[in-house]
Every structure is written in structure tokens, then in C-alpha cells.
Image (cartoon, rainbow, N blue to C red):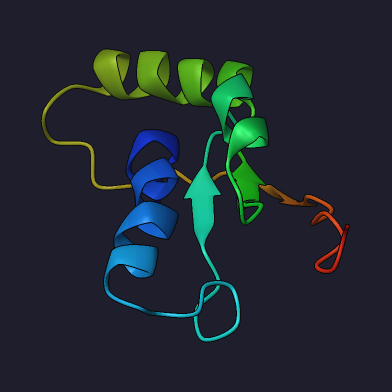
Length: 88
């Protein structure tokens, strides 16, 4: 799992290393930026709502440095459709 910008580079590195992605690997990114729609093979994305993360950040700032509760987010798995493999 990686951020969107990291995940976008993975298919290129995999191709350079002769790794079959997504055949051998499945690439999952976080946050679902628009640029991720342009990457082939298509990335799977865990979408984390920005408003939830913002509320949690404010809560942590108000709680101070002794806060021990870890943030938890509900995520939505986005499965992007891959283009057909044998298109002439």
C-alpha cells in the first residue's frame, strides 16, 4: 500500500523489473487523487474521507501531546475497471 503519488510509479518500476503487475502484484493506493485514474494497470484505492481526517486532526491538536488514542477511519475500497487486455 502506498500514497497515490508513490503508487503511480510502481507500474513503471514493475515493468522495468519485468514484474507482471497486476498479474503478480496488486497495487493499492491511498486517498484517490484524480491522477490515479490515468495509471495503467488501474490502481485499487482506499478512499479515506478528507472531512473525517480533518476532524480527527483537530481532535488530536486539542487533546495535546499526551493523547494515546490512535485515529481510526472508515475507508471505501475503489476497484477501478481495467481496460480490455487484447484490444486491436
